[in-house]
Image 1 (tube, helix red, strand yellow):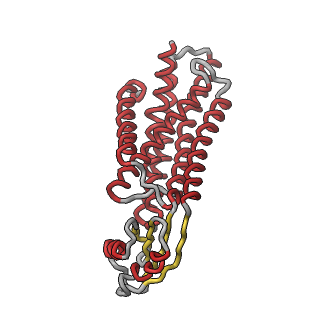
Image 2: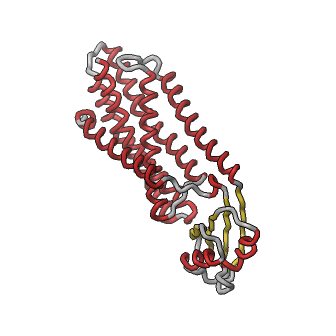
Image 3: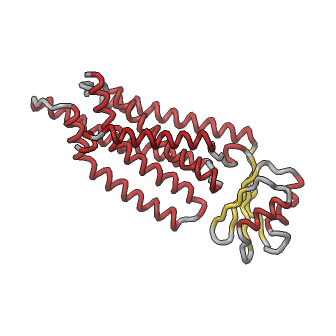
Length: 299
């Protein structure tokens, strides 16, 4: 198959994508939200006309709340995130969000998260991602234990994790850029999206690997001698349409959620869109070629 024949080209594309993602994260960092840093989350509903976003932000700054992020939700709601507010800030908040009473508003939700809880959530999110990766390696190694030639079962698991790292770095790099230029924040929904991406991507990769396993067994049963690269290429040909169809239908649903869903879920949907695209690419153009490259390196 052409993907196996031109695997170096796809390795180059992958390398550039990963390098750009890491560079974006290193240069801009991730704009962690209140969930991870601690702070205040306020939901404000306006009784009649909702003021412009920049008007509310300016009113908050004038009231001494400098680092507030104002995001729309529905037609009459703003979600405001800021650092921990002092007693005076809390007292002036109702007047600030109503822009001096010009736009009558009601504070429907006021949540404060301490920095200690935020740090704990960040640590737990990291532990969850690491545990998922370890579980994937162990599961694939166990499942593929009867197919250890010409590639060890552990290699299938390790390559799946390499593909997953690629799938995590792409949306993380995207949000580093969006956080720098558009104020997008990384919150608990972002972590949930990453965990969903891990499950989606590894499922796609396992489908390809499982077909490789079946074809290797078929070669043994029929006494057929076939180069490993040809077996992997044949496996990709047999699964690529299924992988693309699954990804396209998933993307259609996510695009509908992004464009038609509430503003509160847009970042979540965007993370999943980036992850699904990266996961589809990695399962087809990264994981399988890495199997062939590893086998050639050993031989």
